[in-house]
Picture 1 (cartoon, one colour):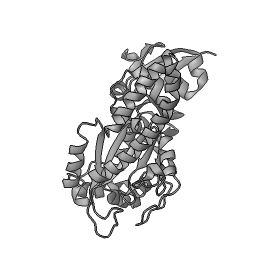
Picture 2 (tube, rainbow, N blue to C red):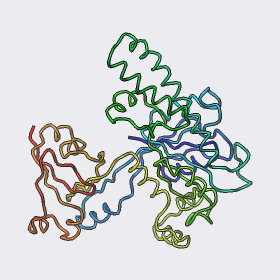
Picture 3 (tube, rainbow, N blue to C red):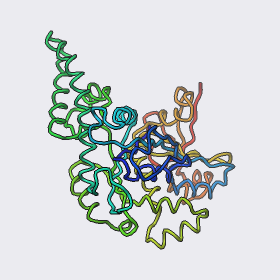
Picture 4 (tube, helix red, strand yellow):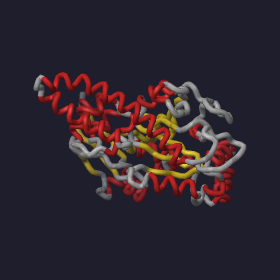
Length: 364
């Protein structure tokens, strides 16, 4: 599962990516700085993992991760191949979610590709290009399906009806993620098309230092514009994140954040928001050899969660011994949790909860 950072050229995508990643993406004050997408596997900040390390004292600690891709800036006409449009659209199609960075600060020293700062206009430019590309994909498929539907094929008729609804939605300048259709129809007929506007989106308002702890007019206009989208929005300052990234010690970073009135770096909020956007959450395994966070889709069952460790765990699943995170913290050791009767034995139908600490029993 991976998310792609997108936006117009020069809105701060690569600066932000640099702060998230140990791999330094090229960053400069001119359009099309990013040409090839930069990939990075990024640790997901989780205070629960730190607490388990404190309680268990393991030899090593392994956090959950998320893959983020920095994708080339898009311009008007991308759906027709303008700028790096074809490359951009091919790269974004391969992602599972979109992090859409919007410039929400004024600075005459940083060039805007359209000459002025207007995040709502910028958002609409990208929306239109993505919608046009999806419309092309839908029309191509619709042309093929319509021929089969004319022969009376029931499956083709059902698919044609779904595609026509999707086409109407796009032609009304609405993204596919807002479509009101049966989930089975979406999975069966639309999901295989990998429509770009069907992907979940997180809007990141890149602001200046004075707005990072509050808001500004640009951010307010974006909030108003996306009110009915069902999308998430976070505010951060890529410039500040870059400064935090250069500080060596935790104490220096903590002091810097305190001076700005911030609880945590914006990059941490972004990583966690992306993790949630991808519909993922975490369970833990905890022992003296290793404390580890494991990434699973929300609503994953115990055997599916076990399969993330090894496919044999899922195939030979017998049961899961489960401790809630809050109980582990309260009783402080596994043995005391057992003595208090707080360890549960769960079977194949158990849906793993975020933060569960699990030991799997299996036999192959």
